[in-house]
Length: 366
Length: 213
Image (cartoon, rainbow over all chains, first blue to last red; front, side):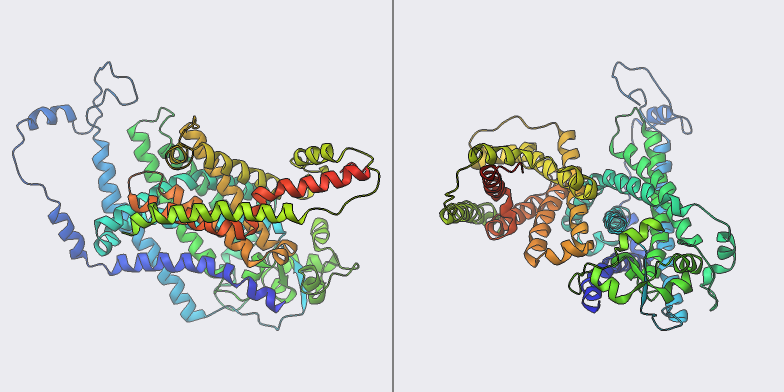
């Protein structure tokens, strides 16, 4: 089993790499002196030349409403010369979304860091039992990592597009950044629809076990066992995992829908809808990245024995009793506890024997 | 300097390695031959060979059920890559300019994008399944992962260069494609050609024995 654990170690490193890259980006943003941004804005100030047509365009713009004229040109918004909401959107993006998004991500990373320093790694209170419970099938783990890799790619490319101008451009210069930004945009647009597929597969496979049950609220109200040393009973998934699942489905669905509106401007959507889609896309993505940072933390360095669930498909009975006691009890009652030896054989660590327990069939009866 | 090298000498070198390497591997297979079968054949071996080449595209019912993910993802990847490689406009233009001298009708842009997405999704799912399943994990060698990784990187760099705006991205894609061409004959990626021989051999052998395989 040891060799198997080692062979899986790179998978555990995958979310860590994403975490580190985001950490570097956001920390760099937070450390970036405000003066640098101000200087950039100063240099962007246009030369003051009186515009002879200013009065005309002021009339055309009409400030707070979208003035629609008549034209023979076909197409959505063809009759609109100036969309005043465009500047609102730009201001929102530059003055709200980017700085507050940075604070949100930075705050989450800081929180995780503080939590790690204070609480440390949540270890199993008792020694590993030498017995295992089967938790995730190969298919379930495959689609989990499929979604995880897509999410990380989309998150990194999206963050480059959102924060790159403030963080990367001053470091790399325009030549390198323009290449990076173009590559990120193309990659983001291409992989976005694939994320929809991952979302659908995830929903179909996991929805049944993520329906809220009695006891979930108690788990949440008592802090999920994070505060203090008490272990709270939970089922196959606890309230936190279920909430992340529904966030992924609902907010992730909104992110995908708004992303499709942005990438495919062929559904008759005008500029205003595109601007609103961008706002929804940005806010939703930042919220999801923040939540997933917590998920990555607790699923890797934050908790002993957690990552093995999604790499090997098995968990130790002691771990299950401490974190998912209701489910562990049910498994014990149904005789679904496996020995380390049986698991090692099914994983190919020992020569296959005909009397091996087929873990997949155990799962079927669960 | 580097750009000229990637666009010129390295392209010719990698193409030569690819063509000669593939031909040499196929020559070795043909040269190895098969043992003479002195038994009276029950069916025509050639017919069995041709039939099996095509019949194996349809998975057996039990395999299609148990290995649904592999079958679906396998078709997504291979069909997506086929369309992407031979019918995407940038590739058609490239073939016309550098290889064949004549072009052909490319697929519309949206078909190109959908193919790329199917290919990416299929490749990722297959690669993850290979890592997750204990049997396929044990069967897989480092070479398998290198081959898969190279194919993935070539596809990824191509997708990042979709805007056609930056020479650096096009060159990255070309460089990785050249690495793949050099690696191809020495790897299991040769199955793109050798599947014909393996299926043909099995089909002929089984037909001669009178087995409907």
